[in-house]
Image (cartoon, rainbow, N blue to C red; front, side, top):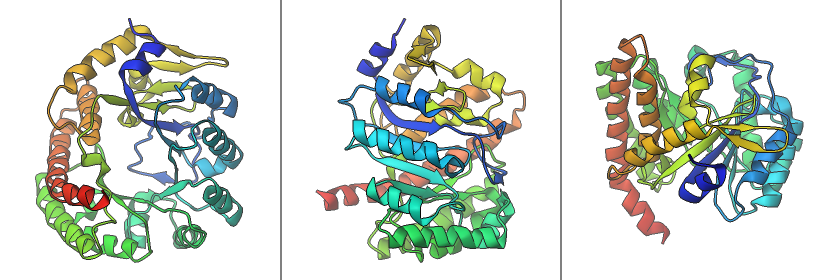
Length: 346
């Protein structure tokens, strides 16, 4: 049976995702954090317990998310300050819809070198159709928040989520977002949506257009981190109740399914391991990472495959197979570009 100490010795932690609140001012239909109570927030003291448990010599990507984390700004500012005091060289990303972002918040983000990951899928129509609660005024607020943080020198790296219905407009939405002066962008198909075979061809055609446009701009805008091969690693995905999952895809599931995959729990004074679950998962992951060329996206998809084994609705498996084909397409396209980028950065 593995202990927490053994876990950190044998496994690299890719991301420390802090979904510390499930409160949100939107209700996006494809949000992967489903089945939220919209009223639960993890206290800063318990988040501090987790941060104090992490080995200080390791490198982590800290992600502050929700729900909408800016609804709990006091806790966000405390998390940022404490992470910086303990892990000054590790990056911090704030995931937000940006509606509540103001100048004071932006100043804090700039002072602590926090990258902002806006959720914005392109032009207004693309957001209005699937991000429930995005009115024209709120969309204007999102654009103003992007302009504000960029003016203050904050990196803005949004996620452009592609819904099956939006594939034909991918390139036009990309053009709109790229015109905002962003630092980079993740173009990502939405998980566990109804991806039909017809969408695969359209996605590939539009993604090739996007890559061609990006290369004309120097090849810097499209984020390709998901398609870079990596070694044995997992995530710490912190829930608002203090339970911890090994990957973000489990957030898509109802509580009774999530419960099967909680392998750590943040208490008032310590992080405790479910040693049986931890040993079971690490054995599965050890076998998985023996495959050649495994990427972070492969790891996330592997966890979806674990979930779908118990899914009563087998049509979900068909849609997911189409989703994986899209992921394979983006991987092949990206990996033609990645070596050039790596050589250029050396």
